[in-house]
Amino acid sequence: MVPLTADDLEKLDQSDRLRSVRDQFELSPDVVYLDGNSLGPLPKATPARLEKAIRQEWGKDLINSWNKHNWVSLPLTIGAKLAKLVGAGPDEVACCDSVSVNLYKVLSAALELRPDRMTILTEESNFPTDTYIIQGLMRQLGNHHTLRFCDPTSLEHPGSSHQLDDSVAVVLLSHVNYVSGRLLDMAAVTSNAYRAGALTIWDTAHSAGALPVDLGASGADFAVGCGYKYLNGGPGAPGWVYVARQHQAGAQQPLSGWFGHAAPFDFERNFRPAEGIRNQLCGTPPILSMIALEVGVDLACQVPMKHVRDKSNALIRVFLQLTDERLASHGFSVASPRDPSICGSQVCLRHSNGYPIMQALVAHKVIGDFRSPDILRFGFCPLYTCFVDVWRAVEVLCDVMVNKEWDQPEFHKKKAVT
Ligand SMILES: Cc1ncc(COP(=O)(O)O)c(C=O)c1O
Image (cartoon, rainbow, N blue to C red; front, side):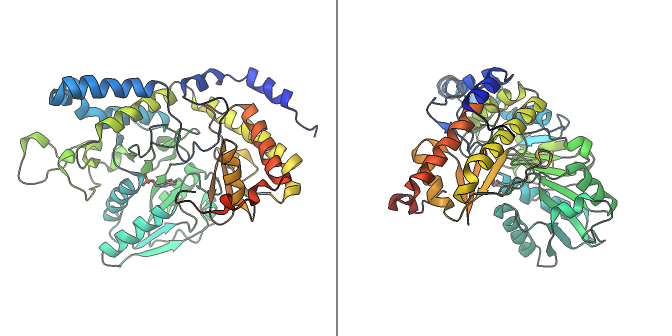
C-alpha cells in the first residue's frame, strides 16, 4: 500500500460532504477532538438557545412556560426527533433520565414480562453500569435471578449459541462495546433471542448518533441511549428510552412518578400509568438540559446517518493505515475490529503505557481518553472530525513516543476522570 501523506488527507477533506457541519461546533482549530464518544463538543447554537430559555422563558414567562413554550411535552417532542435517528416510531421514544436509570426501568419491565424465566444474559465487558444495574435489581428482586455472561458475538449466529436456552428472560447488550468498539449485528441477535423466547434490551450509548441504528427493523424490544456523547447534548445531558409499541401497555416500569401518570395535574391519590411511552417518565424533566440536548439532536438530524457512517469508516481506515505505517514500531497494537462493518466509530490502541501517553497527547491538544488497564480510545465523530485531524493526531503521537515525552512524572499522575 502506498504510504499516506498530509496532502492525501487534505484532499479527502475537500471532497467531504459533511465538511461544513464542523462549523456548527465551537471547536478551536488547534484542538483535535477525538473524545466525542465520551462528551460531544458544544454546538454553536446551544448558548443562544439556552440564553433564550433562561432569560425569556424562565426569566420572563416564568411558570407559564410549561404550557406556553411546551416545556411539559419536551420529553416526548425530543423523543420523537430521536426516534428518527434510531429507526423507531415517534411514539416509541422518550427523552428522560440517565442511561443507568433507563436501564433499570426497562430491565424491571422486561423481567415482569417473562416471569417464568430467571436468567439475564449479558456480556462481561459491558460498560460497568449495565452490570451494576442488573446486580442491583436482582438483589432487589430477592436474588432469584441468575446473571450469565456470554460472548455476545456468539449470539449473532442462528442456533450456534447454547446460551439462549429457555431460562433466558432478557438479553441485555451494548450495540457498540465501549472499549473494543465491536458493533453487534442487532437484527441477528434480536431475532435469535426472539426465537428463543427472550426479550432484548440494547444499550446504544456508543451507536445512536454515530451510525445507522434501526430498532424497529431489528425487532428490538427495549433500548436506551445517551445524550452527552454522539448527540452533543452537554455534560450530563438526559438520556432516552425506547419501548417497542407492542410492549407499551404491558411493560410496567417501577419508577411510577407523577410525570408518568395518566393525568399528572389531576393529582389523584393512586398511580395510573399514562398510555404509551409517556409512562416511562418519572419526575419533573430537567428543562435546561433538555433544551441543550434538543439543539444537538436537531444538528444530528440534519445529516443522513449513512453519510455519517461512510465518513467514520473512512476516518478509521486512514487512522488504521497510519497506525500500521508509523505507530506499530512503538509498541501499539489495535484492540478494536479492523473490519469497519463490525466496528463502531472509534479505534482503540493497546499500549502498556497507555495512560501517560494519553496524558501527553492531551497536553498537545489531541484529546482522546484512556480506559483501564491499557487502552487508548480515539473517537472519530464524523460531524466535526476532519481527515487532517487524523494526520495531526498520529504526528503528535509519534513525537510523544520518539521523544519519550509521556514519561514525565506529571503524565503518570492518575486523574479522577481518565
Ligand atoms: C455503554 C454505556 N452505557 C452506559 C453508560 C452510563 O450512562 P449514564 O452515566 O448516563 O448512566 C455509559 C457512559 O459512558 C456507556 O458508555
